[in-house]
Length: 146
Length: 142
Image 1 (cartoon, rainbow over the protein chains, first blue to last red):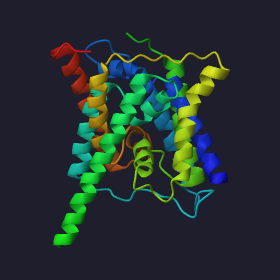
Image 2: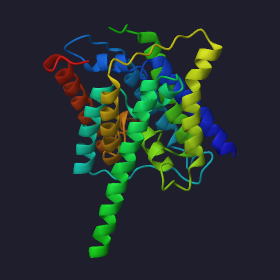
Image 3: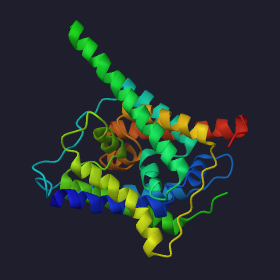
Image 4: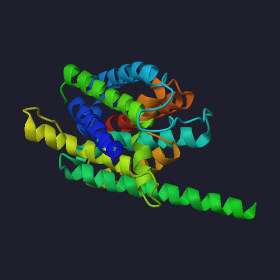
């Protein structure tokens, strides 16, 4: 229970950061990408500050034997650059460039009550769900034929 | 045009970083929005409660800012709704196969110097810049 409440408070910190930084504003995000036009460099500062704090904080936290509420750290172990990673990321960037929304920017934008944010999140969840359904079906077929 | 907001953007970025550090310190988890959303879609992950709570906190945060402070949160979406739908579907498929987005790869992964996250971030930043260039300067769109 305590662990869930803590996650909610940490989510509040995340949402506050996203909202005041400008990441939840599609017009600002699109201007950050528009280096040949109405460029707004603000989001480079968002990424820079977030990275600096995370890199320093992780160095301290990951020296501990385990997290405070859990038995162990859950860190991704895959270090291989593969096709799904690169192709998926390339596809994500295209969608981000069309809409001005990334998942972490769109979720706090829901709290602003903007229709465009709700439409985006609905479509994005449909995209994730469809992609996962296709992948699970393909994996099942491979296991059956093997 | 949007205004350059160095102070708000640096403070917001620092808070995003702080939330990533706290989630690692308490829960031992990467603060990646893609992973959190994916685990909450059916079949729902058994360990869903902390993810739902994080998500709820992230949605409520701007409401609290607007309700209890004088801080204005600028928002404007220049993109027509049908294109938002197209963009949303593409983002969903992309982040699922790419195993992450700006929060998971761009902040948490790069902070750990993960080669996958560095490659992913360079790729999605590159295609986003290229897409905006094509939409705005080649096609003359939004």
